[in-house]
Image 1 (spheres, rainbow, N blue to C red):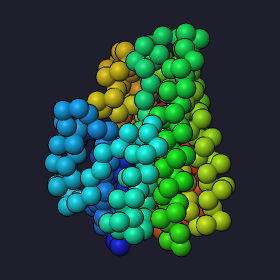
Image 2 (cartoon, one colour):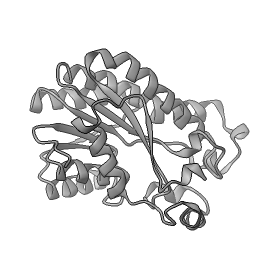
Image 3 (cartoon, rainbow, N blue to C red):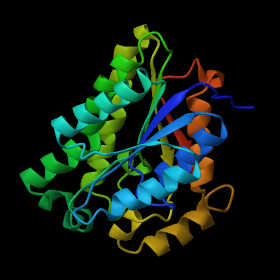
Image 4 (cartoon, rainbow, N blue to C red):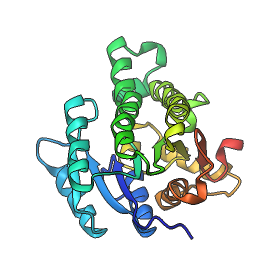
Length: 257
């Protein structure tokens, strides 16, 4: 049984109750971890209200708004974690962003500034939060996990710039694992198959992709956010203490077909 009692986990990127980040937060909570959540603030405060309602359902008292493209907000978030907890055991990064038109258009059409924005939000943000989190994990055998997708390795329909960004993210996982390993910190990524979330609405023909995936996977079905969350809980536990620098596929075997 996965035991995360006495562990403190920051889960970044909770949008709603269907998001991958929320499935991960629930799994970590079921395993006994104390959870903090981050969300992307909006002008009307709707994201905050959603995050606070979800946090209440798992007894989380630390909910922080953070735009990861702003260094001051990232620093402030970890300052609040240090103030409340003093230390951190688990960091989960489930954040990615690109201009919608760059997902639907060809990669060669991506403007320079759009390329930079996608990689800033999707790749550099992980590097930045790992830098801050590692300072709170000193002497605690910490674990960091991010979320990627098979489009990093293969040219997938309607993924384009995000595939390039996810390839960079996976490379960052390896370099961070090598850098932080001597401090006892493990860094990994999970790669789910298609999951119906709010973010998936940005991809054309996503419903068709879901059906095609379910028909082709060895298990003949798609995965759930709970299944993704349970794998993350495993990676953050002592059961996975010898695993770092890896991309773990949670896609019902789709990546082998």
